[in-house]
Length: 73
Image 1 (cartoon, rainbow, N blue to C red):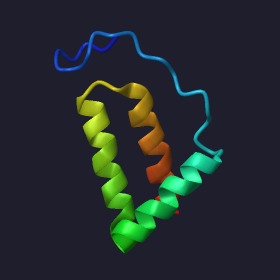
Image 2 (image 1 turned 180 degrees about the vertical axis):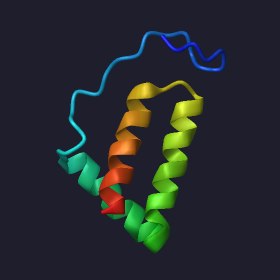
Image 3 (image 1 turned 45 degrees about the vertical axis):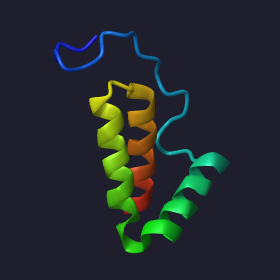
Image 4 (image 1 turned 120 degrees about the vertical axis):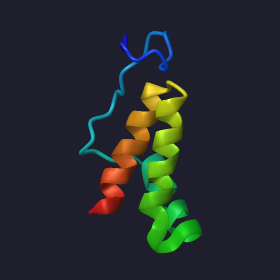
């Protein structure tokens, strides 16, 4: 558990997928982000990741972090 008092006290699951691997759902999210936000797709995904972090959703945060890393390449 986190020592940060703002974070959720719920136990967090870990992401089953390493950062280097993609899947079809991730590819679809990246394609949609590019279609909606163009060159700002990485920024939009980063904001989604921050939102998940502040909500204490570690699994979703990790997913958006993985997507952000793929978009930055």
